[in-house]
Length: 275
Image (cartoon, rainbow, N blue to C red; front, side, top):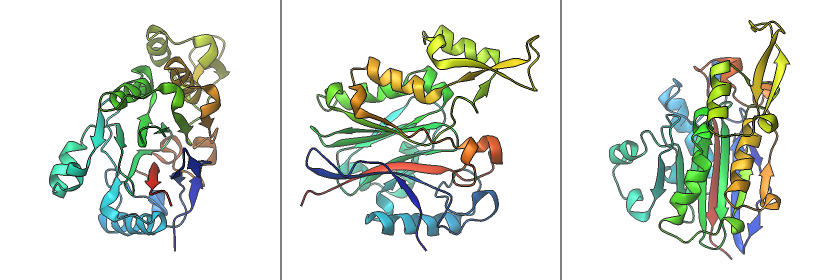
């Protein structure tokens, strides 16, 4: 038994071997709405099955299980750097430092940094000049507060990061046609300065109280892609999966389809030493 991964085209960039992936629901031992591959210990799954799945992923990636980094996300904009010193800390201290964190990055090979999602947008950034990888959790709140742009700025603090040299992968998440939002969410995006003509559409809805029977939908993938371009990234360096979790809930976890008491996708990246 081994996890079935959605792998993105990142075999070799800048002479470095890099694996960028999202887990699917297949290849694990979890049951029910967690079936079958879930490594998130914060969503209600049984700890023993989470532990088995984490070991399976570690074997698949060829890394130590303790080198799979997963923060406890809270839809904020906190970004954490994973250093050599971090890896020496006891588990309780590591957990405390990853509490309330929605993006993690590292310069260490054989360390997998990742985030958990079940409709939110997972983003992986890679800097081949400084050998950095960063995983970002961008739900609608994090997107409004421009967490991906903040992550780039945080990467620039210990290193001089040139956005034009970055490569980015936007993984599976809810797409425009499935992401229905209320007027209050629409207004938060509008107030934050987003181009609403580019990222929002009105679709017919049974739940709409409007006279035209329509509600707003927002394209979170496009929101984040535009943030990246505004931050100085080359459009040709941005890979958008376009995979909708809501419309493919048999293969990917979707909280809108399965409820919040369900599994989570883990999207991560690991650098391997150059041969």
